[in-house]
Structure formats: structure tokens, C-alpha cells
Image 1 (cartoon, rainbow, N blue to C red):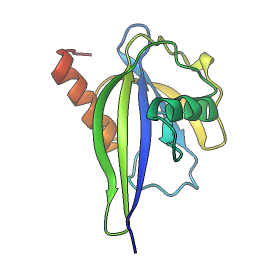
Image 2 (image 1 turned 180 degrees about the vertical axis):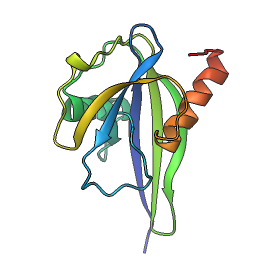
Image 3 (image 1 turned 135 degrees about the vertical axis):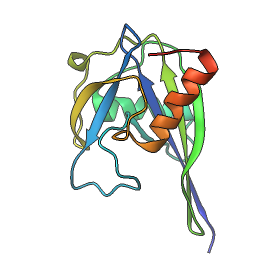
Image 4 (image 1 turned 30 degrees about the vertical axis):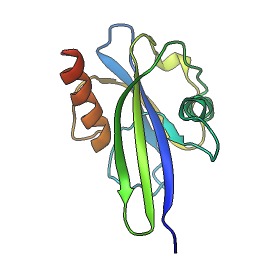
Length: 143
């Protein structure tokens, strides 16, 4: 049996002040690899799809939103890596997005959205915390 490889793409959408980002809450019935209260929008790309093309599609599906700014790749990490499945998550950041809750319309996968302080937090997905720390380290930012 061969191993299945999937790629997920996510984005941290910062507000105008760059001190908060859009957090989304999954529906309670969704089975998650990690326990988290807050994650960021995105999903898995389809076969043959470019990562940014997939991210654009996922944002429209999940939050009814189209990107307005360029993205920076922050991190590439395994979400799952076992004998049957490997899922790699690419996490981007959009520094100049100026996101507001009123700009989004949630799809059926999520039950809520909130602007979250741009800092590591135990309620965040672990890879989100890793990306926040990496951003601060690389760009010398303090929120």
C-alpha cells in the first residue's frame, strides 16, 4: 500500500493595525487532528492545483473572501505523518489585508469567527502558534 500525500494551505489575515488576525471556529461535529479553539482559514489543495490557487478557492468557500494583498510563506510543517498518510500544511501571512469580521461570510464548515490578538495562545492550533513565532522571529515584529 502506498502512502497518501496531501497539502493544506492556510493564511493568517491581519487587520489594519497588524495586531489581530481572523480566527475561525470549526463546527463542533468536525473531527480534528489537533484540539484547538481557533484556527485560520484555508484547506487542502486538489490534485493539479497550485497552492495559491487552492488557497484562493478555499477562502471563497470557507469565508466568502478574496485576497487583496500579496502573501509571504511562513511555514511548511507536517500535520499528519504516519505509515498511511502525510499531510503538509503551508502557512502564509497577508500583512496588508486589513481584515474585518464584517468582510466575511462563513461557509458550513465553521460556526464562528473572531479577530484574535496576534500572539501565541494555547487555544490556537499548534501550527498557527509556530507560524506566529516564526513571523516575529524573522521580521522582528512584536504585537
